[in-house]
Image 1: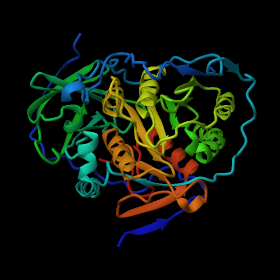
Image 2: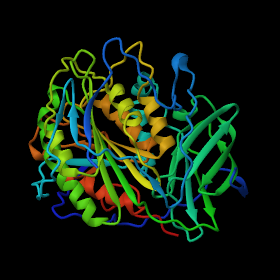
Image 3: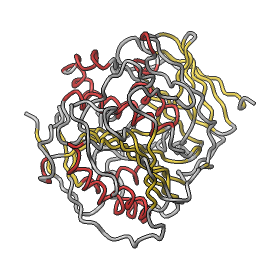
Image 4: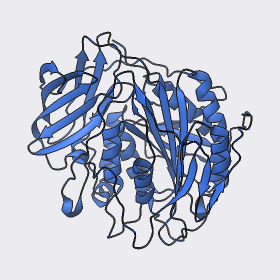
Length: 465
C-alpha cells in the first residue's frame, strides 16, 4: 500500500540531506582527451493564434519533426567555465494589445504567508520507481510520442571532483546529433528515445567545457538504461553558478484562477529567500502566460528582470480567463518561454517552472511542440520544473514526469492539503512528502545553485567522492 508522508516544512531547509553516492557503470566507455577545437521586465503579447505559425528562433532542437523524423539539435552557445552572460530589460511592463507600464520604484519585500502545498517525485533519482510508472501507463507514452525508458547519465567533474556546470556534450550516432548541457550538479541525463528516437548502438560524445575538450565512445542501449559515464577534467577548477534565471510558464485559462492568484502572491517571498541564501548570485525572473488560440491573448510575457517587486506587480495584472475546453496551447507557451526570453549563457542556473492543469492541444500547423521543448531545454542547460495544478489528469502527469526526467528535475504537483483550488490528482508513485509550495521551490532552487541538484526532501544530497 502506498503511504503518504505529510511533512509540512515551516522553516526552509537549505540543503538536501543524504549524500548518496553514484557509482559509474553499465556502459563500455573509451575516451581520448584533446585540446579544445578552435533591470525591469515587460509582459508582451506574442504572435500566436489562429493561423499564426511559430518562428522557431535558432531552429528545431531534437525531438520529433514532421513525419516522425527527429529534428537536429541546434547549436547552443559554447560553455564558459566560471563566466556568465545575461541580457536584462530595463523597464517592467505588461504588454498586451496596449502596453501597461507599472511603477519602477521597487516596493519593500515583505514576508508572505505560504499557502499552497505541493509534493515532489524525483524520477531522475528513483529510476526503478519511474520505470514501473512508465510500464503501468505505457499507453500515454504511445499517445504522446514519448519514450523515456532509456537513459545514459553523463557526469562531469573537475580535477577536485566538483561538478562542472554548463559543459556541452554533443552525441553523434550515425548521421544524427543530439546536444545537451550539464546542470550545476555536473549531470546531463541523455534520453535516446527523446533525442534520437529509434536509434541505438555505438556512439561518440564530444565534451566541451571552456577551453577543454574530450571525446568518448559509448553504447546507446536499445532497451533499458546504459549506466553512468563519469568524465573528469583533471586540469580544471570550477566555481558554483554566479547567476540564476528563474522563469515561469503558466496556463492562465479560467480554471487556473485560484492557483494563479496564490502563486503570484508568493513569488516575491521565494526570490527574497533565494537571494538571502545565495547573496553572491544575480537572480532574474521572467514569466510567460499562455491560453489557447481561441482566446484574445494567447501568449503574454514579462522579460527577464532583477526588479522582483515590479515583476510581482506586473504578474498581478494578469488574470486567468478563456480556455473553454480541456487542452490548451501549452506548446506556444513553451516556445515563447525558450525562444523569446533572453536566457543567460555560461555559468548560470536556468530553471523554467511550468504550471498547468491541462495537456497541450494539437494543432496541425504547429511547427513546435513539447518534444522540441524538452530537447531544446536539454541543449541549453535549462531545467523544466513541471507543476501540475488542480484538474490535471494522468496524461498531464505522464508528460510532466517525462519533462522532469529529461531535464533532471522532480515532478511537482499541488495537493489538497492547502484547501486551495479544485481536487488534485495524487501521483502514481509509492511515496510522497508534502511541503509548502513556496518552501519547496526555494529549497530546490537553492540546492541547484549550490551544485547539489534538485531532489525530493531529505532523501538525496550532493554528489560525494
